[in-house]
Length: 438
Ligand code: AMP
Ligand code: GLY
Image (cartoon, rainbow, N blue to C red; front, side):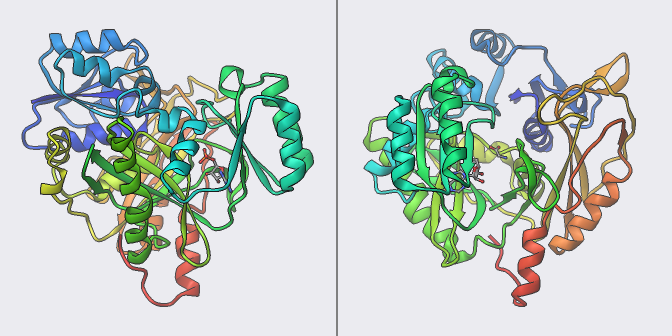
């Protein structure tokens, strides 16, 4: 079967890499993909196709014309544009949420109203379009407090304000100065939640879910969780904070009520569902946000650990049979370190030649993101350039292996964190018993 992966990042390279290892997949097409797939590091049965991911009609035409048996969508933009609805209307098999369901990510106000209506644990909030009312609310609630643009804002839409002055400035930037355009024309203001974050991602067929392995991202640019927010500078799986008890509670209190609540509201949720969680000191999970897709870079370590055939899981999901399949995971930890370009996240520089890159091995794979093959030369073409992802018997071992490979990657201006996995390692040091696997 030919499969099509939509997207260009590290997440999509990992999806394509995993699908290329499926016995029944004859060809993986990645639109538009990146230099990794172009130069063959996805596998011999993968290639890139030059399509615009926002032109969903062109994507559907391509899938129909090239006998694509199944399409998987990586990023949120085509989902929010209705790519799943369009493919389905043309009888093309695709895994992802329909446009209405993708509102769980594309509108924070929609997600918050939904969670409130269905009793899904999340921070208290109110939504505003009027700046004066928003300012008054902040004065009533006090700081710390969190200001969120309603719409998709490419990771720039959330301000965790430590003081009311910061909160007022964020409100003015979004509602008065329109810094985020339409995405910030409405803001959600919610209570600050303390705790540790984790990413909990499942596949949903509309009724049943299959939980993927837990993971944890590192959103800040610099070591010690300092510096500006990014799309994610590294991730590992499993996340020890997601103990078996937390895992069971997340499924019972957040994931299943979400999938069943969407169905009850008449908006069946199919696709990957990503709950960004805050887990407090007592182990209570609350939802910070939903994404209607896999995480990037979480997908890279998750898929490196997946032993099952991804095509088979996707087919079960599309056919509504996720209750009849289980996913098998490598017991080891996988840890991915993002290497970003100079200037990331504000103004990433492009066009730096990649002068050294180690080969992939059984326990270490270099997933590409912002790379491009130009006349046979690999050059940087975006903010996050690689996710170097390795397996190890412990977080520390996976970390050591990943950083050995990171040290062999060379391009001008490269930046990466040196402490990916620090929370899991710190937790192990405090709590001597081995963390449960999830
Ligand atoms: P979001 O895009 O909603 O996940 O927010 C981006 C980041 O802001 C999260 O990963 C958290 O680190 C932080 N954040 C969001 N909402 C809250 C909250 N209610 N309390 C504390 N931190 C938050
Ligand atoms: N790594 C966070 C995200 O994909 O949204």
